[in-house]
Image (cartoon, rainbow, N blue to C red; front, side):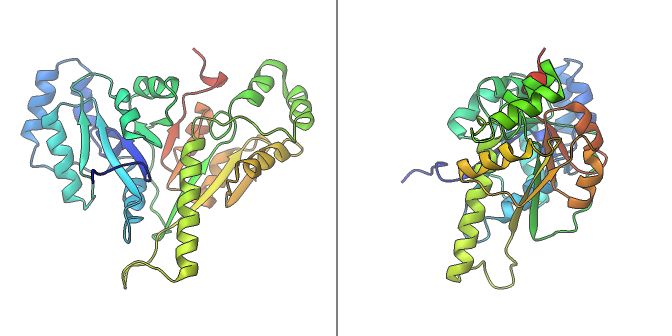
Length: 311
């Protein structure tokens, strides 16, 4: 029987989001592909250092200790020889990544469809926009992000903004176009109507599915191999909403049958300090000002969707 990705959480990631290829990328950005490829050949036997999303990917792969439920695929604009270095770096760092697509300067997002990806992480904003426009969950990693040391070795912590990330930007549009009072009135009037899904709803749903599978396994007494602590997932909603607009957000998650572990309704407070306490492995937000606040605390992905990112 052919291998299938149907029942797996698939994360597609660019080589620059996974590893620190910033020096090489400076050459790539000049448009001199020959020089870039020559540099990668010179460094073929030099493992790349971990990049912004490395810690998240390593933890996600740890969910496969008992049964493979996560597939990570490198999806990159790099050439195949640079891909060889990426795979060698994976081996050096103990990352069980076996699949990759390398497009030598062309946008790779079109391969997200056959991959059935639940998330695409890239350091190239253009590729992320193209993926989001085509309906795929995606975020642009901020290469200069400070990656904080994780104090939760056996737990994957992922934090999400709400509007234009988990949810659509329906309510955000009201706020941006008509102001806070109109937003509160709109959300109060529609508290019983679930919000449409946003670009990262599929990722949250996939994570919640893995949480339920793990909980069922613990109830049935099926655990990873002896000596291998189970990896758990913990999610958080970190939103600028506050009461009474919080109710529609919670009711929407209930209608989707998606559970979230923590919810922070901050009413405009700076998100960075709260993320410092939650200590996520990754945070997703659609507004660059929130990303700038978060990036000094944790690995951050900018979801280039919704009215806040309209060109």
